[in-house]
Amino acid sequence: MPTHGTLHYPPSIVWLRDDLRIADNPAIASAVDRGAPLVVLYLLDEESPGIRPLGGAGRWWLHHSLEALATGLSALGGTLVLRRGAAANELPRLVNEIHAGAVFWNRRYGGPERTVDAALMTSLREAGLEVHSFQANLLHEPWTVTTSSGGPFRVFTPFWNACLAAPHPRDPLPAPNELAGVPDVAGDALDDWKLLPTHPDWAGGLRETWVPGEADASRRLEQFATEDLADYDAARDSPGANATSRLSPGLRFGEVSPFQVWHRVQRGELSPEARHSAARFLGELGWREFNWNILYHRPDLHEKNFRPEFDAFPWHQGEGRDLEAWQRGRTGIPLVDAGMRQLWQVGYMHNRIRMVTASFLIKNLLIDWRVGERWFWDTLVDADPANNPANWQWVAGSGADAAPYFRVFNPVLQAEKFDKHGDYQRTFVPELGSAAYPKPIVDLKESRAQALAAYEQVRRAGGHQQ
Image (cartoon, rainbow, N blue to C red):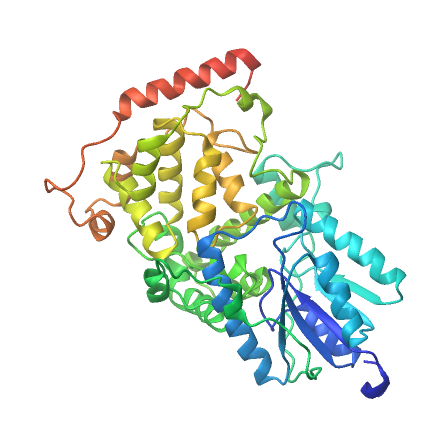
């Protein structure tokens, strides 16, 4: 901590992005250690080249997460300042307004985001400011986990083994006890951003299901670690069991860090069952790391096939009624419809059902995975720039370490195995078994055969080896 008096020490800016938390936030902790008053800034940047705007459900979550963050900062004596616009314009503008001497942020890993951050770091340092960036949102940064030849991993298991062999993830940082704010800094009113749906207001189910913000993310983590972890491995594939952590939105918006999750899940005396479940759960955290590693090397992951031979795949053109039936949960396939209605109602879907619904769109309807990826991006509260496209490509067979294309999830068999009594399906499709429920829009056996024929066409054309 510097010994300068804060009156003569130029203020700091902490620029938050997908790290909307106070505890275990290296940018905030380092700014506090600098000893000067600080401004905590959130920029809604939908203008910088290549930045992907949030979908509707993500915008809803962001609004409430920022509200919660502002409350938390205020309790410590700080203030959240909101600005909107391209970061290359707005961050230097704030620097000049408050005569800042330092800027702190936690690193981002998407291609367009890295371009923005690198240019700002250069220009701000050339202007005489201190600029510091930190590892906060991944356990292992992408350039630190490489194959023996120095390249990126394309297969998950060796990637995760390399992560597990790496130095242990650092301990989480405590939240500061107090913050010294900078008074009278102008900012936008959150309501003026119009992030919430109004005409119509479709967010009723989201409000009933979720409480965005750091406090509830911490609560969910604690509840999972103390009540649900031991049964996770046995129950994780059952969509009606409510056995998963539901931490994905908190991780997506950085309300909880992977370091906090990692250490909390392994803390204390664990039974053999809980130890096994903890390892399985942390493997899911590893899958998130793997997907971010892929995105770091392939920034266009949501637009282009990771495996270019899939560029020749003969997708059906003009999706029309089939796509709408899938989106609305009216396909006549109960497990698919239950999942899609759950998504529409609460902005979330169990992971196994995500795989089933994605497989149905891609392989039974022969609709391009990018169409489904965009729908999930718009409707999931946890739509993640890496996980969302990487998981869609995994199901399509076009991604890194992807499921083979010829693996087609049969939703009827999946229901028999993972929702044996139909509880999950009836929860979201109450008219099941009545005349109001539609007939299937495709024959599962025939559409599977068509998908395999289309895949064989691509395989022969490209000499593709699974």
